[in-house]
Image 1 (tube, rainbow, N blue to C red):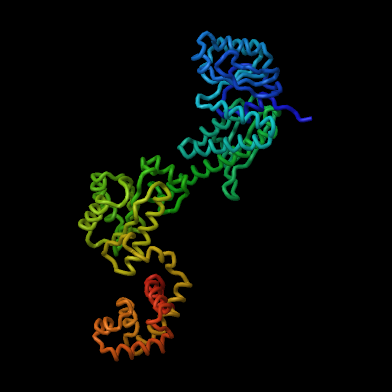
Image 2: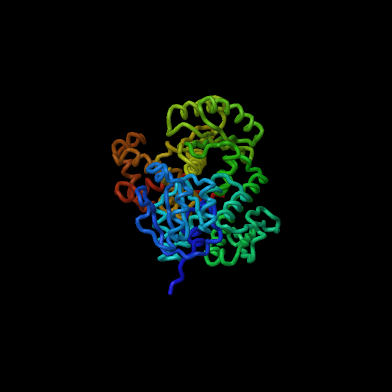
Length: 498
């Protein structure tokens, strides 16, 4: 025979976490046979049996029949032998008094409760307790994580867990120091403890103290989910403190240090940097390290950025480069061109690289990566002292992940190496001939004209290229391989060049 759920269990497992018990604590261990939803017409509960739990929207009932006061509803329903009553809407003291006299658990539901959904959840609990336990514990975990993401402190989250679980909660750090405590520990007769872990490292300890009948299997599940959520929040707080101790006091510094999302979010809140907007990253570099000079220049150009409607964060790296983050505006447009022009005008000797404007935190990380790629590729392709835009890198935006790749270096060496070596030894121009032929779309006459060669001389060079390089630039497959190798060449280091 299956044991029925009690009112206490249904309160914890099926009703919203913010549901409050207003009266009737002595009736919480009564069994629940079924759950009924009331209407607005008389009778408001056409079918209601002993040990049913009744849910009712007081606002709808009072709008239909103003003479039905909360106290009268509680008194009349308690006489029908129901095990508990859940109400949505304002509950007065008279109704609470009636519930206490009848030892009827009176549950006050949050204003945004969806009563039909709650009935289904409660009925699911009565049929499948294990599944509903897991769903409610997962809801608690999600609410705690959302609170942490919204900037709530760890002690505040401890208070939420105590309220939602109905147990006394205590949280300690890795050294055993008290972080937060909530709930009435004096009522606890049993203690359950769970370690908080970040990876394999124990960073704290969570204790839940409650009556054994209150905790049970669901309490253990709440303890597990609560510990997991608080571990995330505590690890994020510790990471923020470590990042700030290491000098990552702003958003740009945290992004450059590749801090976790929660750390960047926390720092952004503290500095008022809006992560929910569009972001644009610029990396500026000078040949000789001069951190003071770069920061002084950054402070001057910040006024221009503010005048153009951006919010601002910057971080100096090793003294030779500076990361600028600008929040505001939208996709690429006139403000971006104007600001880049201003940067070039005020610092003609600097190398400037910019990513694409992007949205939210994921976009912020991407635009920073693009700016760094544009700086690295632009310097290799065009040199220093220029402005390099990721949007103008063409195919190099697709090939950037091959930078420094051994496979790419092997491919370039196998495709171009023999021609490079022959040119270096004999002072010839076979590789230049290949580049010119590809640039002219394979047109022999145009290639000969561009190289100031007779067609017979060009034909001789092409024969030498086929013999020495084992490639034929006039064959489509070889032409593609040569073109790809020439694109990859600036991205790879020459073997043995040192």
